[in-house]
Image (cartoon, rainbow, N blue to C red; front, side, top):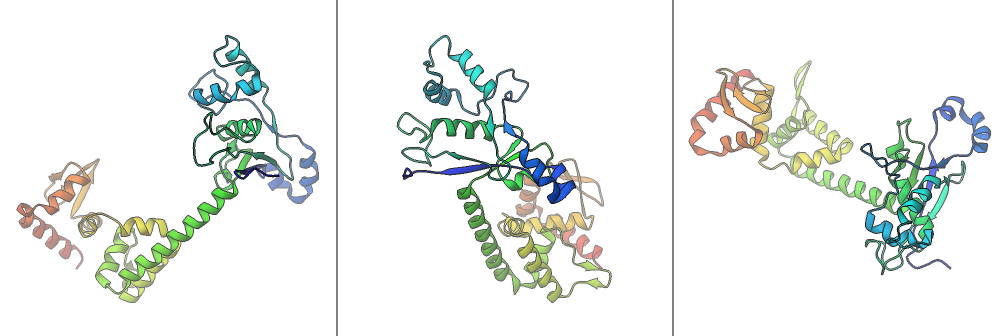
Length: 295
C-alpha cells in the first residue's frame, strides 16, 4: 500500500546521437547497453565527491545507510566511499523509478520529523539532480549532447502545463484590453521590437492589431512582460527615439544624437529625466525631432 505522501519520479535515458542517427534499428542494440548515473565531483574544481545534499542533510540521512554517526571519525571516509561507488542503473525502455516523497510533507524540507519514505531512493534522486549528465526535465535535455539522462516528474510537468495555460490566458486578456486602442497597439509593438514599417509603407491599424495578436499568441510571456512594463509610455518614447536615432546609447549612457549631449547615465536615470517637469522643454524638442525623423 502506497504511503499517502508517496511521490515518484522516473529517470530516463535521453535519445542519444547514435539512436537519432540510426533510428529504430538501433533500439534493440541500445536496449542491451547498461547505462547508469555514477559518481562525480562537486563543481568549481572541488575534489569532494558530490552527493547533491547539503551538509545538514548528509548528517541526517547518511548514517542510516553508512551505519556510522555523522560525528564519528570514520563518517567522511565512508561517505566518500559510498558516493564513489554509487551506481543508479537506468533501463533503456522503462527508466529508473524512485520514491522521493517525504513522510510528513513533500512541500517542506527534509528534517528529523520529515524523513524520506525511502531513504536510498531519495538519496539517488538528489544525487541525480546535481549530476552534470542529468537534466531536470526532458525540455532541458533537448539539444545538449552532454546530457545522458533526464528526470520526469509528473507534478512538475503538470504545474508547468498549468502555468503555461495561465500565462496564455493572461496574455489573451491583456491583448483584448489593448486591441481597440490604436496608439497603444503601436506602442506595444515598438516595445516588443516589432517594426510597423513594411516594404509597402506603414502597417495599417488592422495589420498592427493582427501583429500584436500574433505576439500575444506566440510569445505570451514576453507579451505580458511588455504589458506590465512600469512607465509604459515613457519606455515607449525612449525605445522609439532610439529606433529613430533621436537618442543614442553608448554603454549604459544615453545621449541626444544631434548634439552628443549626455542625458542620462542609465535607463533608470533616463526615465526620471522624462518624468521631471523641469526638463519639459528638452523633451518637447526631442519629440519634435522624433516626428521630423518619421516624415
